[in-house]
Image (cartoon, rainbow, N blue to C red; front, side, top):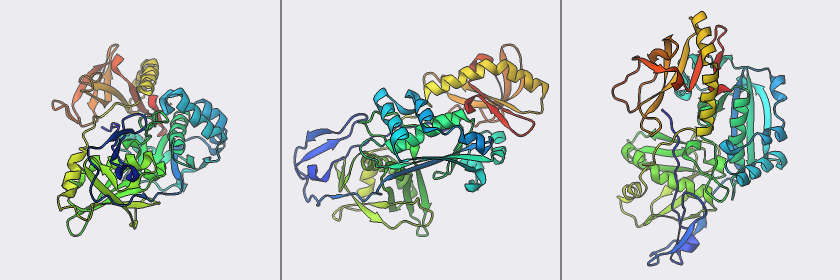
Length: 429
C-alpha cells in the first residue's frame, strides 16, 4: 500500500565549507549555521550545480465529462479561491500560491481529448492503487484536463506547489483520475492529494512522494539509479552508476538528501553530506530519461572504493510511512457514510454491479494497521461482509481472498461499478 514519506537533508555550501562553516537543513525552516571543529582538507573550488532555467510541472485529469463542460470550470480566480490548507498549507503559503495562480503567467489550463496523451502500457502497475474494476474503466474517459505550471523555482517553489494544489482540487471537482505522465501513474484524487506540498514557504518544498526512483540493470552486472521528477522543482535529476542493486537500494536515503539540497537552494558542488564530500557533475541523459538536466553523483578523486558504502550508511532511508491527507480522508469517509445505505440498496437491486468498500484492519489510529478493500458479498443493518481484494503488507493473519466482516460504521470509501461501465466512488468527488 502506498504511503507518503517526508525526507529532509543536511547540506553544506561550498563557500561556507572553505570557512569551516556547515549548514544543516532542518525539517522546517531555513538552514542552521554551526561552526565546524576544523576546516576540511583539500576543499575543492565550489561551483553551482547545473540546473534547468525554470521549473516545469504538468498533470492530466481524466474525465468522462464533455470538453465544452470542462472548459467552463477552468477560471483561474475561481480555482484559486478553492485552494486551502489541505492542499497548500498555512495562510501565508496559500496566499502566495493563490497569487501565483491568478496573477502569474506560469499557469496553463486546457482540455484535450484523452487520446492525446499516451496511456501506460502496464495499467496494473501504473494504476496499482485502483481496483481492477476501476482500471478496466479507464478507457472510457474521453477528456483530459491539463494542468501545467512553469517559472522560477527558488526560493519558494511556487510552480510545483501550484501544480499539485490545482490538480488536487480540480480532480475532486470533476470526479476525475489524476494521470502523472512523467511518473507513469494514474490514481484517485484522494491518493494524489496525499502528495500535495503544504510546507511553509521558508521550509524546503521537496517531498519524496512527488518524484520517482528508477533502477536500470546494466550488461556488466551493475545498476544505474536515477531520480525522475526533480525538474518540477527547477532542479536537475540525479544519477548514480556502477553500483550493485543492493547498494543502489541502500543509497536511496542519501540520494533523497541530495535531491532536497538541490531543490532547497542554489546548491553548490561539492556538497557536504555528513562527513563526506560529494561532487555533482553534469551527465549525458540516456534514452527514456526525463527531459531536462541530469547530474551524476561522483566520489572525490582521493576517495576509496568504499566511498558509496559509506555514503549509503550516512543517511539510511528509514523515514516512517505517513497516512494520506487526514482532512481529505475524513471528508471522503463522511461522504461514504452519508450515502452507504443507498449504495448498498442499489447494489442489492443490481447484484451484477460489483461493490467494493474500504475498511480498516488492525489499529490504524496508532499507525499499525492497514486500510484495505473488500468486494461486498452480503450485508445487514450493522455489518458488511466481503472478500479481501488486497494482499496485506504487514498483517500476517490475513490474505487476499479471505472472507471478512466489518462494521458499516468503519467504511471509509466505496467504489460501485455501474452497468454502463462507469464508476461511482466517494473519493472521486
